[in-house]
Image (tube, rainbow, N blue to C red):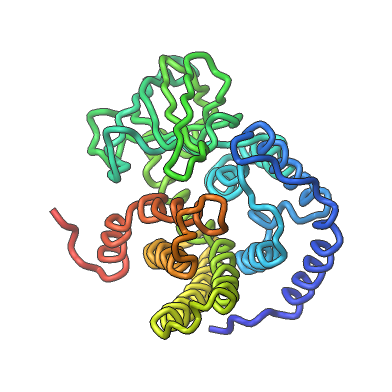
Amino acid sequence: MDLSDTPEEAAFRARLREWLAAVLPGLPPKPSPDDWPGRRAYDLGWQRRLHDAGYADVHWDASPTTRLIFLEETEKAGAPYVGANFVGLLHAGPTIAAEGTAEQRERWLPPILRGEEVWCQGFSEPGAGSDLAALRTRARRDGDAYVVTGSKIWTSHAEVADWCELLVRTDPEAPKHRGITWLAMPMDAPGITVRPLRTLAGSAEFAEVFLDEVRVPVANRVGDEDDGWRVTMVTLSFERGTAFAGEVVACRRVLGELAVEARKNGRWDDPALRRRLGRLHAEFRALWRLTQWNVSAAEATGGVPGASGSVFKLRYSHARQELYDTAAAVLGPDCLDLERPWTLDRLSALSYTIAAGTSQIQHDIIAERILGLPRGR
């Protein structure tokens, strides 16, 4: 498989680099991590700049390879992260683009691309653990609406979201992987209570969401009723297959910074540390090549990443933790200083073996869908 740029892709890369070099120096300062209204405004402002420059549609209307070039170049240039736009741009938006009706695509995709609306993810539940299909939030049909009751946890960006990609159980008698429906829920609907959750790193980008007889129009259902598990697999394939691509580039950049810091503070003289840095260098080079391969494979099969995204997600989760453990070794006692670079990243890295499906779930997917092993009991 040829992973090099075509002439058209090389031209796109060059134009994007030129635009980033011109626009990034003029950006306003980033708001503080705890200022979520400010962060929402900042992230939406960046998305609007991308839209006005003609780059907003790379997430859906461009080829997967062009999308990967965009993620690679924006991260290398130090452009703002998608932030509050994460769920809309990288989860809900691609799912609606792939599974939604023409009316749904017209309603929801342009506001995401223009930087006008934020989405959150209402998948996980307190009693389900890593078994997403065990969700118990109920939705009963009442005329042209679903009436939803239940709760969600780890709901990304719920406190500043306009919409929620919500999984509900519409047939409680069906086997647990059936009877699930994917809904787009307006976050200003009556009956929704949002309680922010503070993480180990001190941030509050997650929340508990409580739903008390919330009415969601049937027109907001993406896919058929009770077919939500299949639609969810489309969402998760994007989350595991391409949503972390820019972060691989960021990790490679951090690795270079760690080597510079180790030379400055004398820890480069430790051969064991040098071996760790060298092995991680090879690890992230391999992960980037795997990302390119996954994207090329998705391009050949309609643009939706396959089960190979679980291979990437599994290894990346652990490699990221190893990277920031190595950062702690480079910093020495300074790794306890929350004001130092990489310290908070080390704390947040602990969540990556849980986020987007636990490592145990990824092992199961790889065993069953790639290796063809029998399903465990």
